Amino acid sequence: QLVESGGGLVQAGDSLSLSCAATGLTFSNYGMGWFRQAPGKEREFVASRSMASDGIYYSDSVKGRFTISRDSAKNTVLLQMNSLKPEDMGVYFCAAGGPFSTGWSLQSVAGADSWGQGTLVTVSS
Image (cartoon, rainbow, N blue to C red; front, side, top):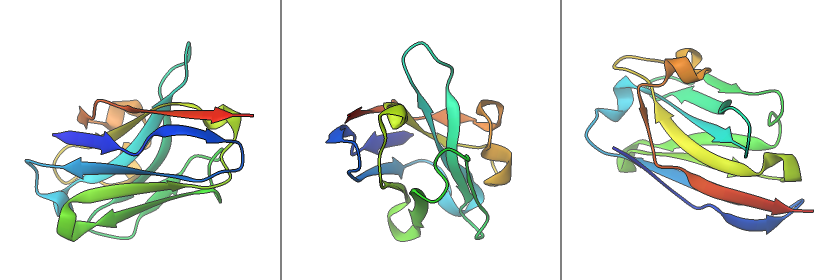
């Protein structure tokens, strides 16, 4: 089970941190990532990482502004979002790949095996 938290309303240029707590899986055996979905648009990849290694991947639109990290002791993956833009607005979903997946394989919706319920991020201009 994946449970996200940390969404909210911010102004453009602000920062926000999202958290995803994972239960029921051996954290180190999975790739974990974040996707987002804006109204009327398809769900898109944001960032992912391998929990057992340092493989980290970002979409071009967030590279340099967002940082994905892990807290293995808490089975949690974090997304620090800086310099937020109105186009970053949407529902953010935490995702996990299948067993022994990696961040590389989680760069598309098809690579996700389970999803959180989503948390809304609103960025005002």
